[in-house]
Length: 233
Image (cartoon, rainbow, N blue to C red; front, side, top):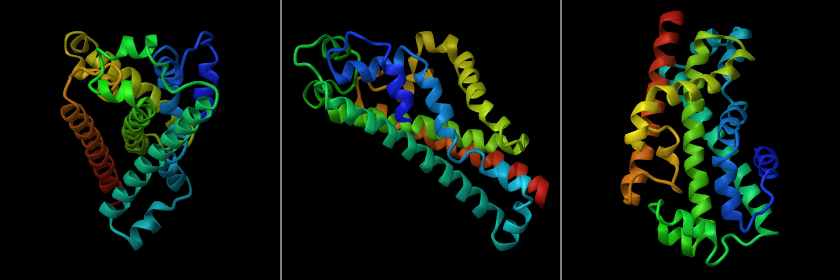
């Protein structure tokens, strides 16, 4: 994950601070798409591996189906979250060794201060702002990973499953592209983007992001449970 950020950040030559590099590496490169795939490598193929080794039926003899599905979903979400969060945090701390977190009176703060729902945090504590944004990116990747895990029950291919994050990305983009023009709250990435948020209320922004994340988790649980129940029970 660190290499995804580090390599994509090399395209920006005139960098004034870490905040500039952080925001533009995500928004002006394929980083936002790559992190979905790289973070999915951790656990989303676990069901396919269980199916290929005929392990699921034996596992269900020792535990209930709801417990098996919920443990898979939670392990997938938190492992993905930690991979994204730790890798991105390492990138930020690495860049802080060479650049200031945010240049006082710099263009980055001035350009994004009007769009974020955390203007004081952006201006006075840019490092905390970036850590908060990293956690939000972790929620995004975790949500997409659990959906990928749930949909992998229909594929049962350890390699084919990693195509799903790409498909989910384009599916949500095209599904809500029309609405997102006038209603950014439906934009998949705006939901988790504190730098250019659709609301000025931090509480509403964070609550909605958590709500959407829980909705994705419950949806993934429902899909996976229904599929396995029909197959093994």
